[in-house]
Image: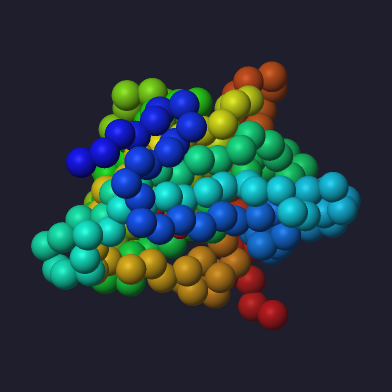
Length: 189
Ligand code: S6P
Ligand code: ZN
């Protein structure tokens, strides 16, 4: 057992972590020009950090941890995670909001879309096979807890090959967000 700090996302007994910096996220956002304009100032800055606890990778075991995401936008598009389907795609996951606000954008293999708002004390279930990506739609850090099977793995290739997910989450008005079609989806080079 160990404490999880809801304000910092610190997982007391974590045994792994990684950070994604702005420069690592090239190609994720629709507005490539806006990305290039931000790059000099943002390059080294951490957009999100993952800390987790892994007991083992045995089937039946669980991984838990937190993701801490900075607020911000590239053009109109909010900061987001790379997104993935689980490598063992039949593996489900849960997310539980700790601080700030965001959404979980989910897409089924049939192309159905679900967007679930996450904030403090809100639980979201990611069904087997669904691609998922989290988005910070707020003005503060967005922090959530996750739990998923230890042998699940992540497949990032599906999003890379498709040029993203079918939809994008952009800011609207002062505080809001809206979903738009990803015009680059499925584009062939
Ligand atoms: C893992 C789980 C989260 C994400 C994390 C970063 O299955 O969904 O731990 O890994 O939020 O997102 P991503 O898409 O860069 O792995
Ligand atoms: Zn996942």
